[in-house]
Amino acid sequence: MSGSPLRVVSLNEQQAEPVDVARWALLAEQALQAQGIGAGECNLIFVDDQAIAELNAAHRGKATATDVLSFPLDGAEAATADDLIGDIVICPSVAATNAPDHRGQDGHHGTLDDELALLVVHGVLHLLGFDHVDDGEAEVMEAREQELLAALYR
Image (cartoon, rainbow, N blue to C red; front, side, top):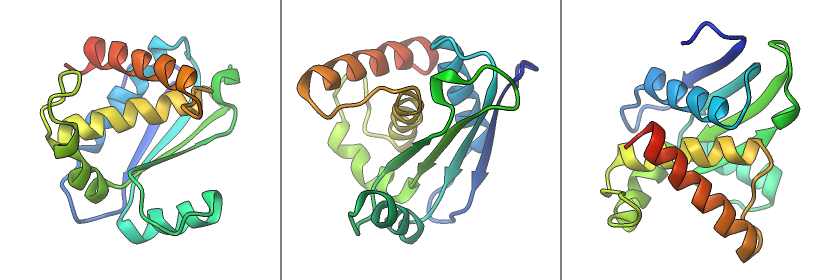
């Protein structure tokens, strides 16, 4: 990591797909820095289908597995190393299933790595207040995702 007061803690709590947690933590850190976040802590957690389905049911009322959930706490307001920006929870097995559907979209090659990169950046932006509830918000969020992916991943 960079040694800054910004810290991304990553955990792999699943076995279905290989995950380079250090790689994705670095991408999350870089995306946060690119969005002007210089301090705080973000948790990046990789879980299995059952765990993310339980979180999705508890927090969104949807009893199905999903690819990513974000839980902002201090979010963009994080100003010190003691602030918790939030948690990003990713399900690699759902990501692996969804990856081929994104092949050819904005430089996505349909790989698990491309999908995980997209989900990490997507999760970071959600922590910082971006959303895609309506078309206008979705366009802004998707444009920023692609800018960050082009600069930090591709």
